[in-house]
Amino acid sequence: MLRTASVALVIIASAMSLSCDPEWARVGAYDLQGDFVRVFNERSGLQVLVFTRQDCPISNRYAPELNRLHAEFGKRAKFVLVYPDPQADAESIVAHRAEYLLAMPALIDSDHHLVDYSGVRITPEVAVYRNQRRVYRGRIDDRFVAFGKERAAPTTRDLRDVLTAMVAGDDPQPYETEAVGCHIQDLKP
Image (cartoon, rainbow, N blue to C red; front, side, top):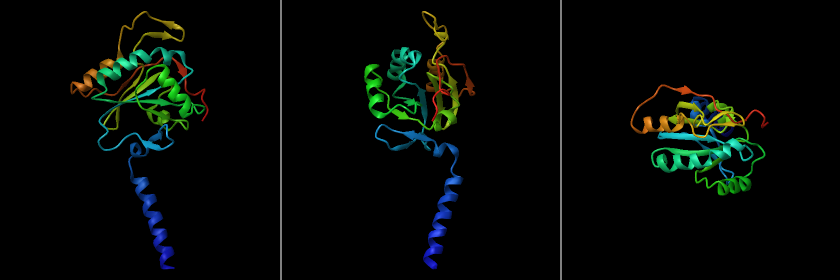
């Protein structure tokens, strides 16, 4: 009887500690080895979640720009590719990253926990966090005006601007822009 009561208390205490954790402490996805990875912790710092998919032509067109941003800001911001397609597996993601020379680590968000937490709806779309607080969600830049309609060069570089400001120590108010690309809602978990 005493052992049963002790086990019950451990279970209740565990459940209470989980429910007391801030939401950000439970947010995560699976790495390419199949292990669950929590995205945030107390020392998360500056993080850039890049939502992408292998079959989205606009996502793939942004690979060179993402590589440039990663090279420029990667020492001060953690970039993570997030694949929300439930059909994506580790092997196909490794091949995709190799094809587009994407050196950033990748997570598989097939159950859309990160999608829901970040509020993204499109690929490519980014969510930028500083210490678990989202400061930006939206497009990488305005090169794509609509699906299939592309400018020769962007007139605003939203992600670069927000990262430049944050690396300089600014603390911008959270804001959003509209991304153009492939809808995530079409991917059923």
